Length: 301
Image (tube, rainbow, N blue to C red; front, side, top):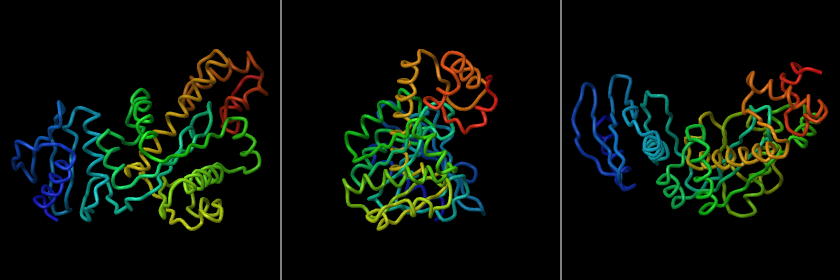
């Protein structure tokens, strides 16, 4: 595929999603054009070299619009075998269960795993709505998109509260196995709602961990794990549901204990944990935190 063929492919994809293409011109080693949709616009570039094709959306300054455009290209059906940018293009089935989690790296708050089933129709609706990896969206936008996703897609959310998380971790002694257990439960729950042969999640350990955790019905599904799985619209939607639920649960804990629980595992988190221990005692940490984190050892007695 050369830059002209790539240009034609991308133009068709964008026009199918109600975008218009204007001001097309050749530039050094590539093609540049403007993309318009409603009141949004941005410059897109396709470069070609001996190493292959490179796509550049960096000149789309509106972050939400850039995510929308990237989502269309990333989740398209064509495969750029010779792309040299950071993205790898995959042929994923249109009927797919995407799974992702939130809270894994946060000391405070639960572990949340979510799954979303998409097909050709709902994938297009999600892309048009601006669904993308939750790490690229602020919490307010995530809340809006979560409601939209729940309205049009079959989904499931498993929340492992801190008390249950600490109990499971004490028994399993391995975070990846705990994650696999949660992913498997979400897939099993969704298979009660939809008939689907494929599931996709981010790579977090050996793929067989999830496979082994699946029950009889789930073992019939073709499960794939890979890095940057959030480039797939189903996994991106799952990441949004998981993040929104995590943020909601953190907010509930803050209301219950009347204090702020910072996200992540920073110095600010250590300070908050010490404050919590002063007020409620170290034994109560199991109700709000993942106590196997090294942060616990740094806290004052």
